[in-house]
Image (tube, one colour):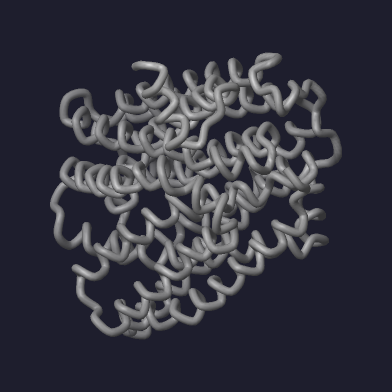
Length: 422
């Protein structure tokens, strides 16, 4: 590629020359984490359906309990280890779990219902925990202007990873089987560790010198900080409202797949193909639009895109409760989340103190996130028992989406007030 072509790409992506190497390492790390997870996600979803759609609320409850147990352990680790040590220990502990599940699946050909249920819970913890640790490092490393310009590109690395992971699962599940896919995921998780170790090398990122000191403090500091800060409470509420709506749609999707797609292999392939469509649509937006929206329109309006899509989508479902609308809305909502809401929400943590970037952020990303799952799961079940179905869920979600939209704008103003001049 010529120097002129390189300059054109740098202008399109809003990347400065000195940022190219650390940005590439960060994007590669995000790629590896997400590819590893999206190999596991279709397997998890198939096992959840195989265990009975009616049992999904109980699996969500077990996931929340697991999150509540893991969060203090993670906070304790952060208090005593450097940030790269936190990455290494956390990711390799997850890798050890993958080896254990591989052994269990190999020892039980065809698997068992309880193995599938435990795997469902573990993967539901894994995805949020691995991503939270990754984005905590990013929030600690990049400054305000850089985060707004470049988080979309880092998220694009994650999206490419998600596409690759989904494609690998859809392609290889019939060739090597589900158990062997866990080992592929393990290799990608280890690759993420090496990328982030290189990212942490002295001088890799000039604007954020290498930090070798542990964060310090206690295991419950994240909870205390969240309860004392209106800003953090607002982030908690934004996350909670997102997960409640997402869980509503997840249950609808699970019911459709259970009724219309036959067999574990076909269901695994179906989930992988849906992920492939969503992530392919997301990629171009992340590369060329996300950074510009966050920089020019601000975080508030960028955060508001997903609540607005949700408001319109749930209202549409309330008026036309047909499966085609469910599918279109699900894709639009997930694309809006990955392309706009997720990078903007991660940027909200940049102006916070280091301790809050690791401890309070992990609390929001794990326990608060799964609490929203709980509310959504049991509300969905209760509304279904009352015979309200898709229409009932949709009209309950409409006012929640309106509140969510107002909260997004408020959070954008609070971020601007806390962010020092670049």
